[in-house]
Image 1 (cartoon, helix red, strand yellow):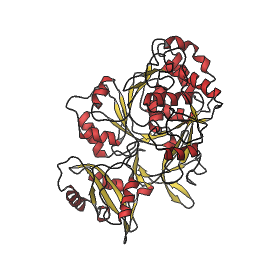
Image 2 (cartoon, helix red, strand yellow):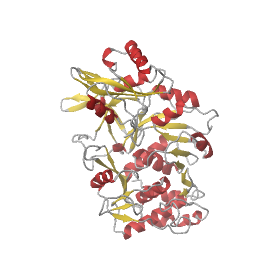
Image 3 (cartoon, rainbow, N blue to C red):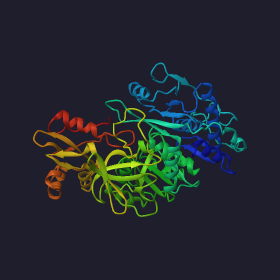
Image 4 (tube, rainbow, N blue to C red):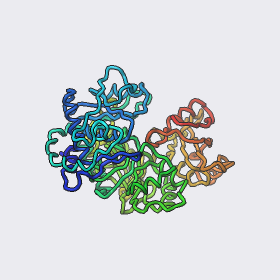
Length: 525
């Protein structure tokens, strides 16, 4: 079984590699591989003293990304289960997650808003001076945990061999906005399998320098960002969030070779290309967390000449499930082919499921080494069958080449008088129309038909008078009647979640509350 601690040991002991940077903060601060190794040992001692045995759960809530990332990987490398928390989440949300995860302690700054009764751990002091209490080796704020002194420490890398036991993991909660969150335990071997798959599929090497501004309490940044970088012995630059201003200069300054992004980021960049050439070292931009409209992909690639690699994943699979190849044929609108996970599209057959023919829309199901066998708590009954197939809740089809095309979530399908309508079909069409920056189609209640499609549109700019009427006329000319939205609501922005995915439920709730033509929506949830 591959252990995260072994990756850290080997990287710290490799000739000439121990002082190489593993993580960099875009705002300043660096963690070397040797510094990470020392942090694992310091965390192992701290957790032992706290009485948290290997396999025990420790929650993590830290404000700065470099400190957060260092603590997460080091605690995992020390053979414990990390429960990543949103640093900005209110106390009520934290309490809901902690009630499911039940950690033994939390790593947090004193004075943070935390539920009572939970032991708070302070940062361990990393020995050998380069990190100390001020450095990032322990999960601090600033300093260089990978200075020249690191190389001398690499010789005792084997001393940390007992830190990792294979009992580590990451415990995440998903959904549960209106009920109990689903608890998902990703074991160390699952995380290592998927991280190695990501590194191999994207051809990451020690020469690569990635960029990630995605939230570290989500599986994408944790596995695709932190652990795949570790598997490749590469470097990852962490940022506190995406900002269009100064983005490309930062990418050039940090000599980034690949970017971990979501469709919302790619959309913004495609709408506002810089007047100067973008850095030439970028091999690809990775898109995940939500479907990327083909028109957005085309606009971005035309503007920048950088390949966009669209992927598909979920927490239950430790992130990546399918991906387009970096150098092989990429298909616009497709999430790519299976990568380290079995994927099938199935339809009901009696009490079970059978695979659908190529091109037929059905339920996307997955199984494999990176996929959970059961939910830790709160998961839907029957989501995983006796053969290990997990029903993702997504709909889609596989083409004859094995590329997956997603049609949407099963609960997003619009039932208009018995006819099933997939919102993505309408959205992709709307995004081809002049003046449409973003588009989401949801189901609004209808007294006669049950449901009807309604479109929410974000204009591409301020100079688009009559956009709603123009979209209505375009749909009238190009779409069959059931797929024509009954209303076009112009909004300043769409409600987005932490990973940039549209929070459709907020739009559906507004539509249900109005029971007629929905009101315009502004702001974020």
